[in-house]
Length: 430
Image 1 (cartoon, rainbow, N blue to C red):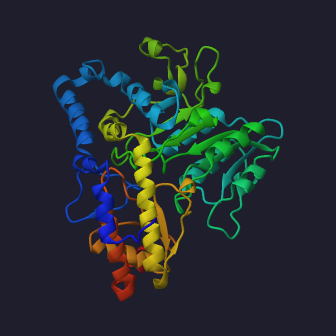
Image 2: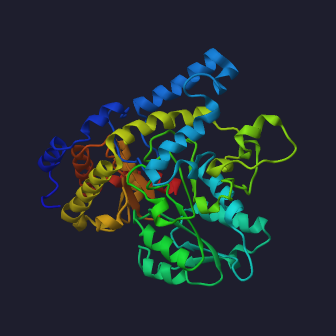
């Protein structure tokens, strides 16, 4: 960043911001600077409207909502999938809107994890999100396999960041059947070189999946071009579709059969071919494309906000969203370098824009009480043990002036040690 991130500079950036008008489309909590969009994005007026539209259809038509009107519930998942596919660089039939991220991971493992000969192991990273590990371990146990023997972890060494060279080297292990990596590491905000990892996996005959929960909606993706086998993500973070919103998954077409059908590992009524669904046949007819991985009846009320939540993102465009996101994270890093380093802070996120996702991790030994002190003053960050404050500015509803105010407040709290009054509270919630 060419200039010191002062309040004056922040206002200059806001004046030049082509996305600033989207802020009015969101419900920003009064008196708050909300910087926790990578945990739960704020509600947009668009998402509220599409949710209320579905509630009204339920109220006025009852079961007729499944087939009535321009947006029948019966095909809602496929309609949304076609739009989300554009955000992740996929074809519409390669994306499904279904379940939760963890359930989708179980489904994808059940469908694609096929140990054979010496290829029985799964490669993950040292910083993988806990739910991914939980799902993987339980899935292996259900297969009668010892997770400690069949999960290979790429070591991080003394670095906070993952080393793609080590991952590529690990992918050459002839015992691997599958690999699973995050697009953005949740603790550090590191953005992995996904194209390189997918290419290395294909060269070594390894099925590769991506957990894109911390990147979808804040940057472009190119799943087809990268050659990923599968992916999963939530819509409630950067995509702002609400708590517990229905998740998304991707399945590359090379895993369809010759007729475009997918034989789901976990089958249910909504895994059936749509044209056969109401025949109530004892014979199972596999569904077409990734939609066959839906399993059960779609959660319509939890899908409805996705429709509206996508609209500001589609209008703004991921290229512009990513550009502003990079500027915002650079602003935080520059402030930390200039103003917070002497107060014991260090930047725990890659400095290169191409290696950084949408959030910045600042490390401090008193990070937890500081997070509580910030919240008490109306700034909403996120804390991760043992010493990480995560700041996740949304390009659609945050301003640079807010970032400047939040960073100045953090500096004041650290300099005056006013976080100490929260130390006892922090200990209780540890």
